Length: 224
Image 1 (tube, rainbow, N blue to C red):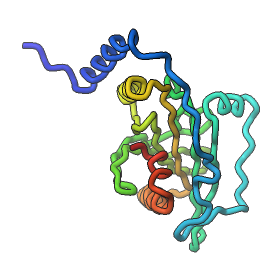
Image 2: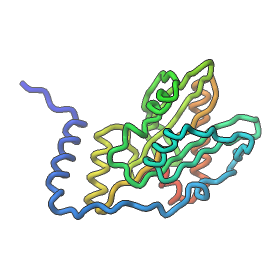
Image 3: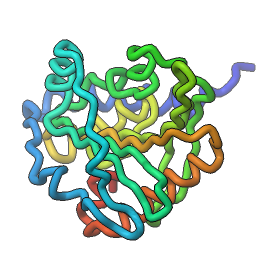
Image 4: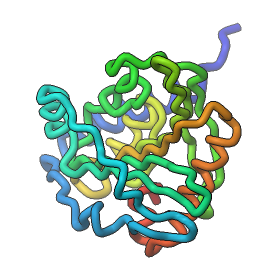
């Protein structure tokens, strides 16, 4: 007796068949254009957090910057500090065409490319701003530096984790809107050897940030 196919395999196969069947009827996709600016959409002060002007983002090598310019149309990089002197680094990148860039957006890949060792990679569904979001977590280590990282990716209106999620979101966006799916990478990190504390602080930070933003703006970061 044959074993049933795993659900993710069935979904992926179904999405492929839908895409093939719809290809003849769906008009060429239209590239989405952002109707917002990350720099003004994301508040510089909220709750007990404010931008730390003493932390200046590190300049990237020209080849790395060129790749980012290809993948993303907007990139926001800030460091925030609270009244206890604790710091959290926030990075948000927006791109208007997310069809083939899943691997490029994976933060563990980016950190490895910068010489970090990545440990403890996991995905955990976590409640934030009234939603449960699958967040990826890992520890990036290099020369005594321990940087816990929390991030997630969106495509269209969905939070995606793997290729199945990407394919389903791409097909849904193409059929419903006739548009190329846009998307974001939202990353929070800190320098903290206490991993449970760091990950808890990341969630509390993002919960406070999203709670301070208008609902529509918050949904751009978390999907709908």
